[in-house]
Amino acid sequence: MRIECRAVAAPDGTLRDGGFALEVEDGRIRSVSPAAAGGEMARCVAVPGLVQAHVHLCQTLFRGMAEDRTLLPWLEERIWPLEAAHDAETTRISALLSLRELLAAGCTGLMDMGSVRHSAVTVEMLRESGIRARAANSLMDRGPEGLAGEPGWLREETARVRAGCGGLVGYAWAPRFALSCSDALWEWVARESAGQVRATHSSEAPEEMEHPAIEEAGGNVRFLQQRGFLGPGTLLAHCVQLRAGEKELLASTGTSAVHCPWTNLRLGSGIADVPALDSAGVRVALGSDGAPCNNGLDLAADLRLAMALASVRRRPSGLPGGFWLRAATESAAQALGWTGVGRLQEGWRADVVLLEPTEAEWQQILTGEDPVRALLELHWPSRVRMTMVDGRVLYRDGDYPTLPAPPKDLAQMRRKLARRAGIGGGWD
Image 1 (cartoon, rainbow, N blue to C red):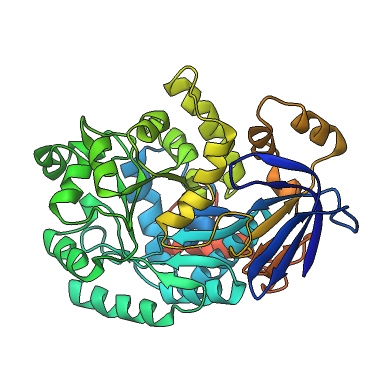
Image 2 (cartoon, one colour):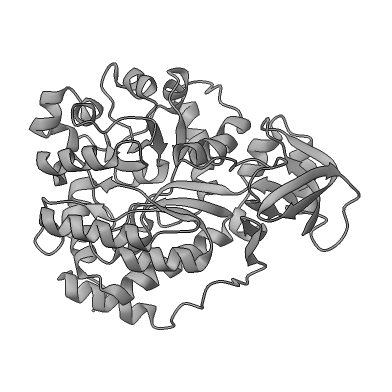
């Protein structure tokens, strides 16, 4: 397949203008070379596909149903009851809605945290879609009845979900967070997951940090270190409430931090200090997290917010557009254990997004101080023309070749979930 476009995002984090052709063969980029752009994508810019390093596909059906709460009430009063109310069909529809939204916003890879139950259904939908993914079943043996699982059952469910993975979908271990996992669960996960991809939530909200086990350990990152959970294959979502020395601990162990800026603001958790994490040598990736704590799954929008918040943390932040592009592409791919993913370069996997700015936008991007940042600050869902994963087109001009249309009775499905969860409000 030959893709002709006006410009490409280069591996060094800059934009190369003047017309290019990408030759794609057997899932890889065979060449990127200057060429006169023609055809229907001639006004597009080719960029590496965005990688969502932290997302909850099962929660998209709950969008707008968990507002005006901090983390623990958000979980206890809304999210956990709603997840417990999921059945296989509602889980499937939530994953379908998520994937359609993600592909249209230029996402080609993701790490899904899953839920305690029905995550095998999500794996099936991921494989059907053709997206590159790490899939998990959320592990928790402490928490509300109907959601938390008994250790033996969690082992069986883990085996079922792992057995369903394959192709572009690999497994990841995902104990939910410190407050929902017993020491026995942490010991099992640390033993079974050594050297594999794994993820959890860490150092997110002030009230979480008041838990006696976290206080006794000297912080959430140290709590995880003591349980053998840090390392090059580990991703920690949030990292807002870090204690002194924990940035350096993340860097020395090769553990990645996943910045989720909208979630941290909506739940009142704070602002992660990305410039400080970068200065300490920590690999930073980004995620939209779940729709109920973001109300969107548009990673470019998260990038725009992250870039602004970095300047609040450090004036100026000193992090150019190239840093943020790499954080949402190559760095995230490396954190998830994918090699040859995240660059438009010969021999790399053909995970490609074509964006079409308006002519006025393009002229301003070209002549701006930081063209890559300006490109990232576009509204991607209205600018993405095509999303390709491993050389296969998964989205093109509103069409999803690999996915069915969503059902028309979403309101009824949401009301049913709310009733099963025992949640009152405007859904009756």
